[in-house]
Length: 297
Ligand code: NDP
Image (cartoon, rainbow, N blue to C red; front, top):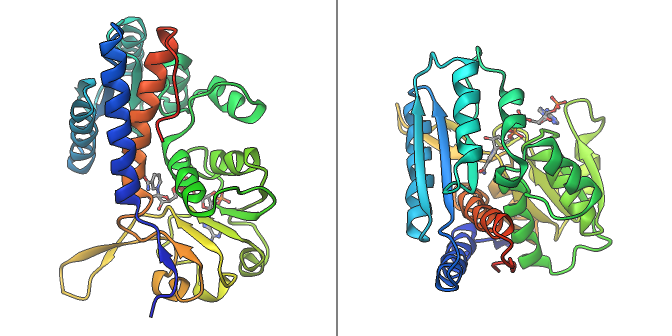
């Protein structure tokens, strides 16, 4: 039986969205602009289309303008760059999100670097990455920002705690490690070449798993009482033939028997990402228009 506190990402994500909605309303009431979020999707992948529509639906719910750009799979680099340039110049747009991955004829890094840093609500532009590392106002990648909020809600101060981030992607692992460092945790970044990963994890008060391998982090890798944040979203066959189910990168039942607190999959980190995107869009709008931005929760 599970002993760990289950960290309810849905509840915190709802709270963030409600706070963003209040922030948007206050901005409008003060005569300010309506924040606008543009989401660009190239190709007709149905799962990505659902995901993009969901982002826009959530943006509308908090009172933002949302703009969908669905481009055909054969879109060229030049067409993509031209769209980003138009969005950079559009005064109604304060946040630009290009859904990854992009088709192979488009250089994703070049596209991400062409987004104006002030509108880079995904926080992937080198300007924002640099600011995250060196300090100063920055737009920060949504998933790690959501993980950090869940951790702070659970633990309060992270100062002096030992944290391990398993995974070093630009989207999750690296910014997560930087955020933990900013909170004065003692941070280890693990990856596919790490020796004795179980031993490294066992020393950690905080384990953030972002590897993309179903249930790779085992219960006996977790220090008793540690806080476990499972970023992984993996679809695996369900017991019922022909059906699938979602699991994380952590063997949940085993880990929950040892951990102090743990995020479930689904219902943990996943719902936080869109909420933090909306938070970032509000921040971007406030900063572009020289309005004060106060942290939403
Ligand atoms: P990437 O594939 O970009 O990165 C995976 C990382 O895991 C790499 O750094 C890799 O190391 C490391 N890794 C792979 N195998 C091992 C191993 N055996 N031992 C240790 N480290 C290993 O994935 P992402 O960071 O984009 O995503 C990670 C997971 O998070 C996925 O399941 C993804 O679906 C999920 N995700 C969830 C989001 C959400 O909203 N909840 C948002 C984004 C991602 P190396 O660098 O050495 O190859």
